[in-house]
Length: 218
Length: 218
DNA sequence: TGTACATCAGTGAACGCGCGTTCACTGATGTAC
DNA sequence: TGTACATCAGTGAACGCGCGTTCACTGATGTAC
Image (cartoon, rainbow over the protein chains, first blue to last red):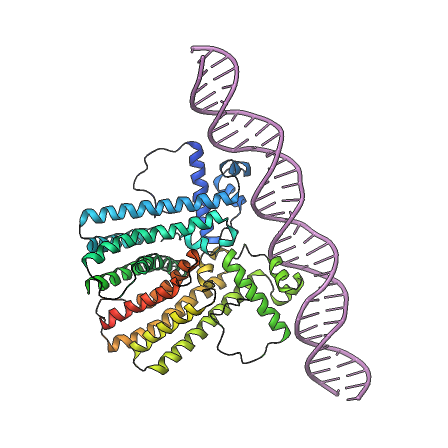
């Protein structure tokens, strides 16, 4: 079940080999478990039982548990990138103005998040940042790079916007770019904690209101 | 060290008994460890070693590990309440207008967060929400009640503001109240992940800009 | 002021279970000639 | 088309260590009379 939904690319190109299918199944199960019990709280025993393989089968796919952590995060970040690429592409097809394109993107994002059947499963970056001492330096760096990539992506948009629409307030564009990540991560925490999937898209829409106010004034 | 700083009440009234001191020491160590390794990743062995007691000493203070989880969260929520009470009190002493009082509160909050020597240690509610399957129903409910209490507190302020300053945009006041929690939790994740303590207060100040724009228009 | 008893704040040893990891092995599928 | 070999995708058993929990016990401090 689940396999998160957020980030499924619009269409699968290549069919997966048997081994790749097993690996993806392990990752799906692991992601779900890690987002609800933490990494240390997720045992390999439960994963292999759910995946229907043996311990040694797991170690065929991952050298050790840390490599599972790394693969989980890499896949999550790649899926987010795909999602953002797709939504920006659609938004830009609908409008060529950078501000309105961004506002459309935010609306599409909120709609996408609102349409997830069980709500957003959780942000791997947020989960990992609260367990950073469990991971290798490599994984921690990957986590930070994920956030920096989001900042760079949104910042580039905001630069184009600010060039056309002088901001009504004194605002640091990096901070405003970060705010989308913050509001999304915070919104996920609200939705998860209160078991109300609507809270996350609602927060994204509030961020949208802020951007609109800041550049458009209404 | 640490003992988090955020939430230390302005002054200690009562001196703690020996047992209470030990208990607080365990909680300090546990909070630090849980926020960096997760709850399952934090062993009692490491806590007792750091606290300088034995296993049985620990179980004198807490019936089992779940009770530690509960005590940790209860203390965290109480400390947050104390902090908000203190900051609102100071803000209201400086100004009696509800909007400007709230804006001053947000500035005080940002300043407080900026002054934490090592940055904010992390939000227990966020940490727990990413490990909810580890905890009893009681602890999960406590976590949700924490967020609801923040919402109620900020919502009450926003109601008084909206009565005097009709909002410039169509905005749900519960959502706007939640946004402070979201921005704070998201800001903590930014600060922790990128190891830059300034990002959290920066996000709080952005939220402040939004509130100002929404009610004051500049 | 002295004695008896209760409570506080722990100690020390043992428990069994689950954890991640290793190792030698194997049937099925793919590739070269 | 048949055979030899390599790679893929695992199996099965064993490993030792660390985990949370239990239990009987104890010295120090507080309270009643």
